[in-house]
Amino acid sequence: MRRARVLVVGDVMLDRYWFGEVSRISPEAPVPIVKVDRIEERPGGAANVARNVSALGAKAALLSVVGRDEAGRCLKQLLQREKVATSLHTDATISTTVKLRVIGRQQQLLRADFETLPSHEVLASKLKDYQRLLKNADVVILSDYGKGGLAHISKMIALARGRNVPVLVDPKGEDYSRYRGATLVTPNRAELRAVVGGWTSDRMLESKAQALRQRLGLGGLLVTRSEEGMTLYRKGGRLHVPAQAREVYDVSGAGDTVIATIGVMLAAGEDMENAIRIANRAAGIVVGKFGTAVVYPQELFAVAEEQS
Image (tube, rainbow, N blue to C red; front, side):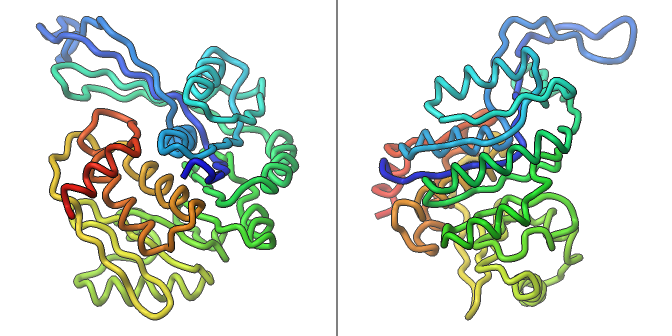
């Protein structure tokens, strides 16, 4: 795992948490008053994927766009601490995406999002850096949060596959044609339903998932199904991995952990089936933590020993 090299490209954001006590209701409106006494900041989006890659001991490189602002500077500092090699383009015309969560009594009371799309010029220059960074990557992860940072994703997939580098995509939106040719696409249930429609049985789900996979020429389609675990659809059949029986505290960022773990394991030489089983184990750990979090190798190994 320490020799694995993973390149993460996509939409980054800064996750801010304001923690405080709630003791009364505002006289101005029927809302709680939160007396903020603690602030935390963590990398989010594609930055959280890269942070998870680094936490597992692999070499993480991150390519993205931020604004020329305080949030962008903060994000760079956080990623430096996480030992992520960053190539963050700065665009003075945008603001770095920030998700602000207000927490009171261990519950999220409010989330405020601040975001603007990057300009086309910055994205075009990012493609040149991608080609340079691709030369030193064992696996590429494209983390699409629909913020405009992956305008050239089809070209990125083609370039990676041209070098026989596996490409994993965390998708967004209803148009999956832009992910054509990827090694693995990892939608959750809601994301897949928005693309293929609903289903009433596992057999119907498999039919729709396989049809989508074949139409787009994907190596595999991994559907993360929350308490039902995750299912990989590939040529020749399916692999279902049940969810780990652990207490769920917070599911935010769990998808980042899953795709980061699969990427690291593939880069370290594991086959797809084992990589997904290990990623499922990682998901069972990270949902027991608050907010966007990471999983460390010793945690993965400890869970493996418990299950052996």
